[in-house]
Image (cartoon, rainbow, N blue to C red; front, side, top):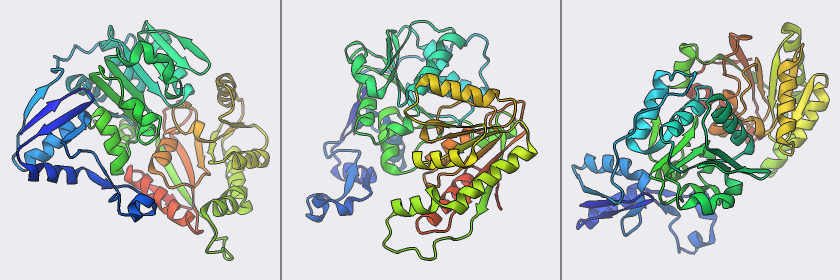
Length: 455
């Protein structure tokens, strides 16, 4: 057996068709909702996505996993490289920073293997790890992709102003600065195609879990044919097989050194006190045919009892803590506006339509308020926002996604002198669909190693 390894794709060559067939089956997974498609009902498709083709072709990032699986049956293929691995360069320090041991090790593993999904908990210095890789690999053209311009601009400021790195460019809808190291939103990727698509030797993708399934994002991370160094960064790689294999195919396996609970024990993150409010069941007349969106609107967005409970929590926090910083996350704009009207006072609602300047100004007012302050936001505050002062976080959204739940929790765990712990509030909703979602969030918190209290 031989495996010819390329930068983007590799190929298995074997005279043992049964072994290849077994590998194909091992890397084939049922697509969620396949049973509702016409091609499945008409028996033109078996409902599976295959990550190894009948010809033995697969995304190169899966090589490490495939080799491990082959070793289990004592199969050790001959590997030939289209681009032979090079000796990893020496890790470069960033001025005014000292890498933690886990940061250094993640940088070292990335350089040694040349690729991988770097799993680093929120607040653990993920951007410093990225900066260390960039500085070490400087001199090569690089493309660094983001799914949100706010993440891009924060990273640009950190790399240029805090780390003092040169030749850093940026590209998003409202601006363009050329650099050999090009920070670009995936929405504006067409602007760097001529300069970086065929020439970049390094591809990095921030919050790569958001690129796992999109019609634009997934092809983007599978491109850049000369990028032998390929790194994804996330605190929450997906658990589902298809999005996980999409990411691993593009970047390589997940590389994890430290967990959130480790950083809490070491004092690098703030300990969360997670409290789930055991809410009274309020849907006795619920129509069994009522769709999820209507249930969500009636029993979360417009639910007076639930929203009044949020107001009571905020009022209680303000009475007990005169300098509290309270973050409230909602799923919909309507819910955010309703809570803004209900909470009043020192309360701001950030929306996706707000400009970068408006967002920074609102966050600055939230941080600098002399008394207590409340910031309400939707998904724009779920990832990438660095507000260490948050003392209380209310998850008003519901939802069942593990990634969304843990990413949102991470907003509140950053260390700050104003807090020893951070208080988290969530709901045990009881209505159809919502009960399952609440149970899932409780499971996600516990899986991360956090204690959960029921109020």
